[in-house]
Length: 316
Picture (cartoon, rainbow, N blue to C red):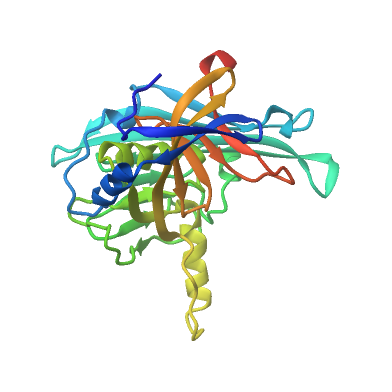
């Protein structure tokens, strides 16, 4: 079991639906020490991590739980794989992740019909987890999975903003995509931006690894939602003359906050996990000491204690 880099804690057993869990009550000394921990800001020193806890080529898979939450014939799977490690012109390492989602679920309005989806995207991030390039889609089947207007685009950081470039033969034109001002954002590094967990919950591993590497108690950042960039751009054009404008949904404020250390049961394995709260989704998540996502509490249908959890290789 991992030895977590947290202070000494007192454990009190509680019940968490289908999870066997242990809640932590921090001591007064621990609370004081947590208050002294630094918040994540753009000028913070480089986080010390080993490829966000991944081995090159390593793939992680996530499924819904508990097991009886899906009906016969249904499935839903999220994956993330570290595909490549390279270096930027500045010498900073770059990490390319391939992430995907595949599902087949009964249509809620027609139980004789299955809703199917396959989506694959890639993101290249720097050592701070900042996305410097996002590639949309792959095969024509994968293109239908995203709400992005142009499913085969490229979003690339150009030093002060993102540039979206549409491939030839499509209606959508290229455009610059700027980020709002935020204390956590540092355009020079760059740092302070992560891909949103709403794109794929497996992506939580990237900010989770930074959170752990810097031993933070809370971390504010901008949460980028690439699948909404094209849609948001169209809305801005449509409502350009509207006095109230449109509220941005392609990039929002995000925050991770430390809550406790708990023991959780995933499959047949017990983990000593760090419980965080995400303001991006308003849900609790559990990571290990390297930042690896173990479990995310996420509502599904009418299940009160639904979650998305790590699938062990022996369960593939």
